[in-house]
Length: 92
Image (cartoon, rainbow, N blue to C red; front, side, top):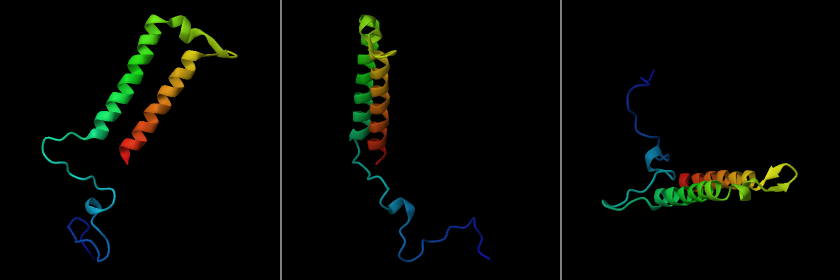
């Protein structure tokens, strides 16, 4: 029986998990990961725009668009969708 706690080399024809397709490339020292920066900038800007609109133009976000749904609800939904979309792109 093989001891499950000892390190065994990967089977022939199989790559080590850290060397496979999902492994991230190492960046040279001093370079930032641009995806992380873009993720923070895009979502931070969307949040700031939503916050500015909520503080300066509450009448705009409170205006009804369809039935009881307001423009603020749609703006919040779009912000959540943007957050999910950028998170999925960041995770690639």
